[in-house]
Every structure is written in structure tokens, then in C-alpha cells.
Image (cartoon, rainbow over all chains, first blue to last red; front, side, top):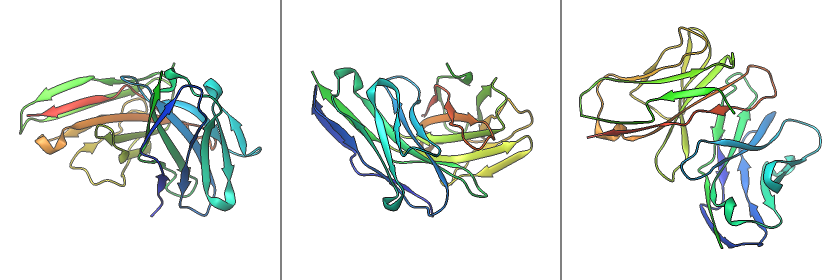
Length: 114
Length: 113
């Protein structure tokens, strides 16, 4: 069965630290890739997306992610985090096959210390 | 701002009651989804739909049922609520275009006592 794995369940960083959240998926065919963010008390929002083309995609608030097809990975990065980045981050994969459904990882809870 | 709405936002209900969680979107999206999310846990796909009169079970088995009579409306029903149904239910929709993301509603936090 297709799955999405996020390696870190809970990450604690100080402001200005660099961030990298891992995401791997298990499907050999064509995929669309997403990172969503859920701030406390708010709904899920799209952070960035990859459909095709340049494997390095930039999203809102200084986030970026790199698609490495050979590693089935789509890691999220930010060079310098802020306290306002405290949230839960979900990696998601849209399996572009007959079923065509979006599968989410377990999420990573990011806590930034002021 | 995504135009997808869920009601109610919060619901506390007794065991054995029938409940319907509403989800509506005004974006004309063909595809709609229901996810279940326990606090601090992953999102589990429980139902999805490709269009009117199309519904499919998701990866997580659920005792809930859904219907898709109109494009914009995708309600979820529990015939007899139990405490094990306590969770957050998230509705989402997306276009059937190949390259598009899903938009999420605010969610319904259900507590069955």
C-alpha cells in the first residue's frame, strides 16, 4: 500500500536555527507532492507544492522543498526559523493513478523557542 | 481564502445519537474528501468522492457513511455515535485537473459522551 513517512514527530528549535523536515513516500509512479501547515487552532493551509519541473520549489514564509525522485523524498527546509513557525507540518502525496487520492504523513510538530 | 465550509465546528453528543457533519464548497471542485484526525496524530482518509453519485471508502475503515448528491455538498453521517468516534473530522476538496492542491475546511471536532 502507498504510504508517506515523516521522520520527525516532534522538533524543538531555537529561533534563527535551520530546519529540515524529512518526508519519504512509497510509490513508484507519478506523484504530486505537498507540504501543508496547521497553525494552532487553524485549518490546514498549503505551504508549497511540486507538480513537475524544477525539483526545488519555494513556498510561502521562506520555506522550500526539494524533490529527489531517486530517493522518493520531498524534504522541507527553512534556513532560519521564527517563533511564528510553531505549527504542525504535514507532507502529502497525490498518487496519480486510477485511485488518485491524497495521502498524508503523520505530521511533525514543530516548536520554536523564542 | 478557500471556500470550503464545515458545520458544526464543535459537537458534543450522547452515545447512540445519529449525527451528520456538513461540508460544502463553492469552488466547483469535483473531488471531495473526509479525513479523520486525532489530536497530534496523522490524517486518515476515510471517504472520498470523484463527483456526483461517486463515493469510495478510504484507507481507514470507518462506520460513517457519505453521500454526494450535489457537487458542492459532501455530508458525513454516523447512524449511532459511540465514544470511539470522538475525533476531528476534516473535509477537503480539489479540482479534477491534474495539477492542483486540496483545500481544507476548518474541521469539526466531535465528542461523543
